[in-house]
Length: 423
Image 1: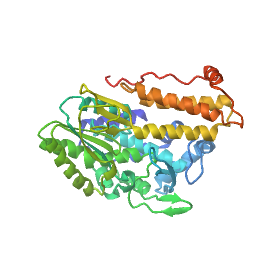
Image 2 (image 1 turned 90 degrees about the vertical axis):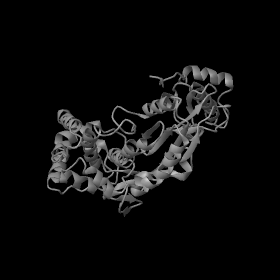
Image 3 (image 1 turned 135 degrees about the horizontal axis):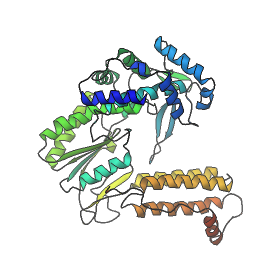
Image 4 (image 1 turned 45 degrees about the vertical axis):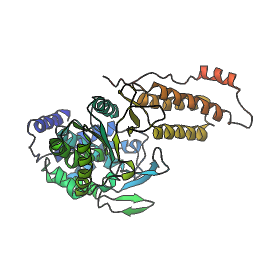
């Protein structure tokens, strides 16, 4: 299967205008079995309430039946189950759509096929949900661009409710640039129109790709590749008098300009461009920034946030990053709430889980320049831990000396730089 996908990728790379007419046969029993093996366990189930463990029972029969229904055009995706998760830094919640397990398998296979084709088309400025690329790569690139010295203006943007407002007709038109297989087109349409199930009520989906769906990331990247990335590369940069660069991670984009005139013209044009594809900017998250030298640690003028980091110029005019205030506060609040809710767990289990959470924070935020703020975060967690361990019973469990001994037995992870932004 990997060989077949590589062959498709090679053809797509060699022939940028090639339209693929025969792809649906790739989503066969072999590929679906591989997708099943790769699926993570203990994930939330969809409307069918089926987990990976349950689907694994009679797996061969289930996959045979699924492939048979797909060949007869009898396979129809179930509605995605609507759930809400807290949105970092706010009291709002983010909607997610969880597909049924069988639909997860088909979407996973579909994503493999589409990635093989479109990875050859996507341009360098795009980093979100792409093989071999991640958030740290986007952070490195953006820091490098702004640190060049020629960038003086930044337009920091966020598309309002992007995943809920993707226009299905435009998406299918973009798909047809590369995919001429009518059966694969029909399958994607069925996923787009499958609907959402919330509190037992089914809602039709006339637009959008459910955030949380397995193939939503590649469909979103396809949409923004044509609606935004190519436009910026082929049109905007041509008319700019000075240097112009962009970095995009999913629907979160930052645009960098040398001259104010270019930045101002782009900002006006961007609104019209997005409107053409039924999208609009989230005004409260979109900012026009003049970069300036950092005067103090508490001075936020001339800074901007991207992927949980605040970018700022120091007194020597070097671009640096630190954990954003919103992300720092949200992470600390989330950690506090977890300790409060789980403080009655057995000590070994409690500490093992807490340490794992701290390592996750350190692995992401411990980048060049940010040691101070990650260390401060671990210090604050250390104080919170003392507080909530002492609330396990009516009497205090520790004084500070005993707590220090406790931490020798259950040490918190040390902060070391995990990502070098200059590599």
